[in-house]
Length: 337
Image 1 (cartoon, one colour):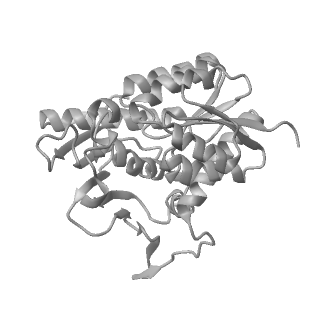
Image 2 (cartoon, one colour):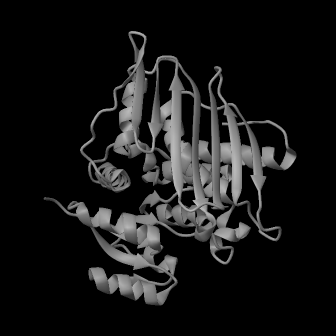
């Protein structure tokens, strides 16, 4: 085996600890050589746990480290763009957590920097890599669901999981509310399943349970496509319910597919038939993060194109920009791409 890809982790929060660090450690073509976080106690705890010697409190120190080839950015949303741009300008390839940026202007600058600096910029669009989502995509592309005319998805969290005291409730640091955060995740696999179709307009509505809140905690969107296809999205993180609930349904004139769990039905000989295949994977999210990390590492070491592109995340930012404009003006807004 040749030289391993040397990874720096920027932002050592729960997402990095639970998803990305384990995934990088399972990939034998790379090694985590550096950590960066402003929380010194967390930094040292994770560094000691995984025997990672280089621990930086300042991002500039990490990006100046010539022994770091590529970085994961898993920081608060408002830092994604400046850190990704800064890292690429110092020769680092970047895997960036979603949302890639807080607005489409920043996302455009990130994509332009990647091209100018000849760096890999791969957004963490892992949901489209879930085995169940990939399976549904094969049914759609094979024409087995027929012409798709209606899709809907949602991620609904109970109030116990929401706290206005965290940075998620600060407009400056979060960049937006629940639609930017959870909506971007629903848009991830929705757009991947529906491509090459792209939405042309959106109607958005937001709601705040707390009057003093800086960002919305509940949001609803209706997206129109060039054909008669419609996508509706509902997201919330302070709903009065006991359990977190995520779903996605897609309906065609020959069949339908549902998540979670995966169910696929087709009309055959006048009867509705369950054609859901058996999938070997048990933890779809874990599998999606692993595939994302593996694609990132392979793209760099083998010099190949990654199927996930920064333009995919840019489209999501453009949709979100139009959504917030619609919510504020209470009008349908065209999505400019």
